[in-house]
Length: 463
Ligand code: GLU
Figure 1: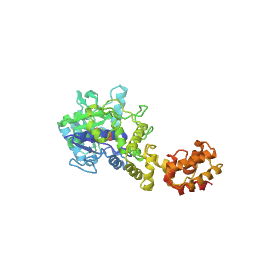
Figure 2: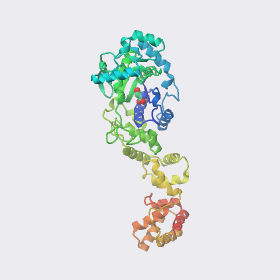
Figure 3: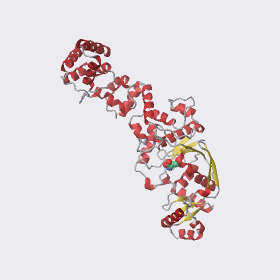
Figure 4: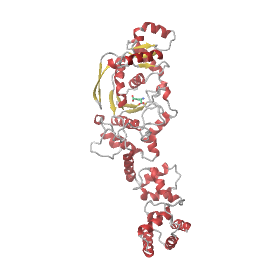
């Protein structure tokens, strides 16, 4: 049974785009192998918690359709799925590690640790805990029993730690270079390192697919697994997303929260399709494919090490492709929903064929189509000196009995010729008079949708 997970910390206002990319791989790998995809919330760093962050992350995952099989909201057989609710477990395993001689109590004060680091710096040594409490463990235990505040540290063995990463190959790190990691903090909360191992083991996670930034932590995790006699999961550390200029994805360059893109009217399917291409390519080189197809052809061993570029411009392009390929009825529903069901459905329906080729995201719809619902309040071109032409236009409109795009186009063309106004100029005037804008969907079709009365009213208003 394949069980995968993401373990986000609610330290932001929403889920990060990079976490969604990792979630997608985890989700696909679980689906592909008829397994389960778990969401666990790692909320042990209490100082960095963002109120509402957890809920928002879970709801964004739902909006995207990356529905977990087990999560804090859904529960499941290995819960609770929020680390802050699992504290006794971490304490139990920390004590087990101590009993096995693999970890120890430490009561060093922050002041002592600062002083020690400074001295190490002066001596140009690797900054590492000097094991003072390990060497005085007997006295330390007495003090702990007496109620002194303590942390639990892992005793890093002095040996090379070797493991094989599905994406990055064989990794060798010398344990001697690693610090005696704190596993349990003085407030009783575990650090990430202890909690992640305990939970991945107890939740029966066998594939740990996560961002490369956790690769340096993995040797510490392996030591904990070994110390507790637990089998190792498979590890796959996927590369972090980059901006097009190769810098790390950060709020300063592009929005990093997934819901920002959804709120712009990026379709979930397009978003996931684009993210699927981060560090992986379709075996046939396809850009566009369904989620079902992705699950079928995705393989963890094909994930590449090179840093994937997350380019919002390409994402928009892809979304435009999805919009063009949507069924009209489906696109109508999406647009209505996007605008909170505040637009008249019958008009939206009529405008779909006109705008489908012209928008890249749902938020492009209203700026382009607003004039269907509202008379213009301002005009891109000053038409005040064009009364004669506008009057003739109004007369022509009122004389059209068969109100259809083609007929409108023909009659207007005849008028332009008769008035000896250049076509481009004539139709620009008409466009701006009707819509207020220089850029609109095709004019004749738009007027056909607006109706004869409304088109006439708009011309007359200007007169
Ligand atoms: N809590 C870590 C994070 O926020 C999870 C790392 C992991 O997947 O092990 O990304």
